[in-house]
Amino acid sequence: MLYQKFETFSRVVAISTFVIATSLTLLLYFTNNISFVFIGFFFFCGALVVNIATGGYLLIKIFGKTKSRNCLRSLLLLLVNIPIGLLYFIIVVWVIDKTVIVLRNNSSKEVKNIVVYSKKHDYYSLKSLPAYSSKKVRFKLKHEGELLIRYNSGSNDEISGYVSGGLGDGVFTYEFINGGGRVFEGD
Figure 1 (cartoon, rainbow, N blue to C red):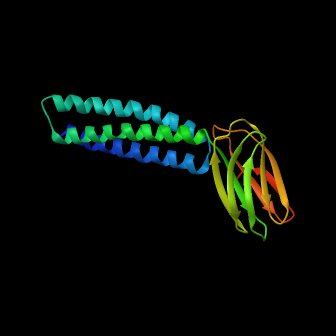
Figure 2: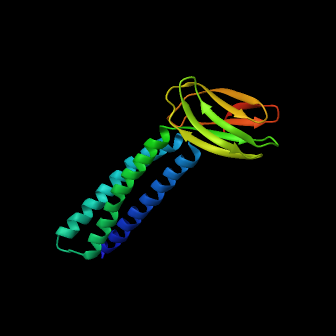
Figure 3: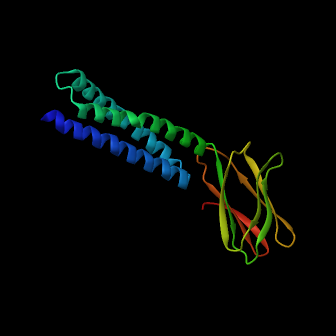
């Protein structure tokens, strides 16, 4: 009787671990907030202990006297989280290695021929950005320093800003406004 309740508990552990890890990964991806990396790390440490203890108990029950198929199913459900966790780790490494900028056109005109570059590298180009629209861009910054946006909205203009990359360093917004542009940190 007790092991049947434990099988249910182990399924709840597996599913809740999956749901929480998925939520943390998605929150990091969409917000680029480094806090979710730290929260995820502590969640991982706690979930690892609980999952190992739960899996160990299920293994004892599988090879013990009970030999329940439900124990095997519950153990397999726990084990499925391992490759999923590795995938989430790869996603987290990819996200924290990127710089995020938002190109926001708050002017009444379409902005054309947008190029994001530094003195040494071109990072991103966009043919046009319609009036009153925005585009979030992720790229690997080769070095921190001045990041420039060259664009054409009637005349060749440029916006300059300083960025540092990686580790969820925040979102930098480059805004096109009538008569020029500006850069600020934040979304």
